[in-house]
Length: 69
Image (cartoon, rainbow, N blue to C red):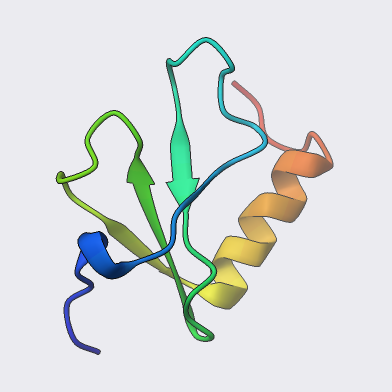
């Protein structure tokens, strides 16, 4: 897969992000096989790219409160 250019991706803030502007995670639904993730405070910073199936498992674990702090 080619590198993802964050300036041409449609980003949305995660519903689990902090509403006061801190700890904000943005994800993109623009791709079928992968999910790009970035820190909204660093829009030109690094982008992590996860396999879609792995991201779905992570989100399910978060929603099910299956992760410990």
